[in-house]
Amino acid sequence: MARRRVQVRPGKGQSKLGFAVGIIFCLIGLIIVVPTFGPFGLFWTAIAVVITVQNYRNAFTEEGSPTHVIEVEEEDLAGMGFAPDSRQMADAAADRTKARLDAARQLYDEGAITREEYDRKREEILAQL
Image (cartoon, rainbow, N blue to C red; front, side, top):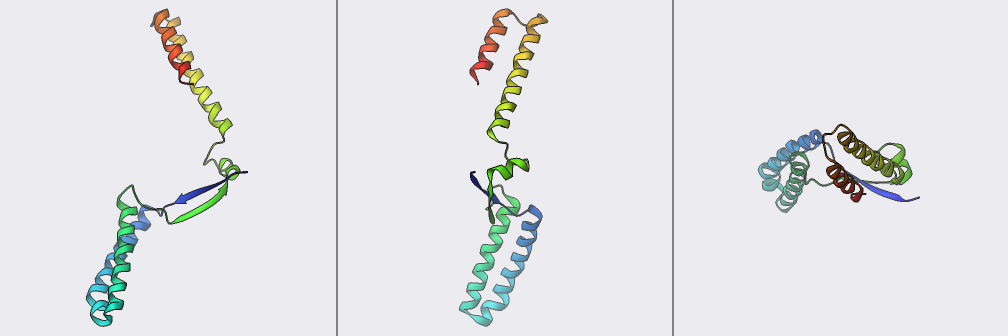
């Protein structure tokens, strides 16, 4: 049984809140902590900036970083509907191919396309398998 790592990003709302709080912590760092505690204040503010930037990336861009990694069994994912197994994927692909072939055949039977067009489309669909 294969294990799969699923990376999870925080939600947009959570990241927006983290971004807003991060800005407040940056301001506190610059206005209060740096003048009062010196080097510790610089460390505080640097960490606040990193956290704020990370929350900004997760909230407002598509390139955000995951904050959690979960390892699950492949079987568990398929059972929950997250990752279909290869048989389900093959069945779905076969259904789509059959539907496309049926549609081409129906167009031919109705006289909407010629035999040559039907044969060409059929070959094209089968070549994609």
